[in-house]
Image (cartoon, rainbow, N blue to C red; front, side):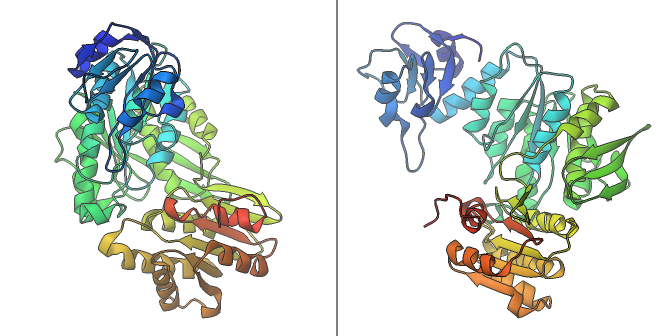
Length: 459
């Protein structure tokens, strides 16, 4: 973050400064990250009020703070604002406007984090690039990411998550992207958005902040997105390997258990790309990154190197060997689309052993929950030798697998992860491949820890 003065910040957010002006060197919404010179912004939610921590923030070195209350007894200056949550967004919007960085905004029901990482890996071959870290893709995380910009950065890649209407609209106004990428329109959060058409509407909010002359980069293999061709006022680039009409396509795709290789065709360009991650869904993630690289003038060699350098982060499709087993740990989140994509990776892992699909329940599917779980259970039946399930709606995985003809003795439903792990210890053997997948709340990454006797938080 570039040094700021509190008086300037107060002007940006339309607040009233109480006390003397001071220098600011960082912004925090969490007292655990306060450092000397921080501006503390106490946010408010349904179950918390950050104003309770103002005193602690000052004790830890905060130079100033925002507040929705006035007449506060304190030793540091503060700015009174109408709404601290909105003030954070406004501060980030005004702060980012100071920097002429090339900006990519990315949203989608599935694939947005991997696409973000691939795009950042590509752009960093030519430009110093700031990217969203971890789950900082919401109304708090994205503004805090933007505020990390300084004059040394030349590009930024910002992921935008959401669970309801209006959230991406607020995020894109902060980001003001040159490129807006929509990776997919699945059924994640359908409980709140009503239908896939509702999800599409929410994702399209990203275009509201697109800079004049910017481009929408859309997945042309997604029918709901492709049917918009010719209807959007923005310049539109479609990518996809299943739709030959896309502007950027892939062919001659070779997939192994450890990676992918394919040829990209973009207008007159043709070049080969290699990825160190498996899964056909990653072809489209890479094509979106290619579109962004070409937009910002990268050479084909720079794009190739950026994609080859990409590595998955966190608990997304982490594939490793342990005690003779091949483990696919993909436990960050789950929707029907991402579960089916993960099962595709399980299918293509080379093994002389057996394949285990170990699935936790999926959340926020509303009325689609039963069908979504049944569909994934049916797909599991065609790929896995064993299906182990746990959590809310897990019985529908079982129903789908049985209907698809899976051996009933190979389908097992558990009430606890301890019981699931104990059964796996007895049944699985070295040489087998184990896929762990489930919504974040399921914490399916605890199961391999239980199997291998590692420390967990599981009770």
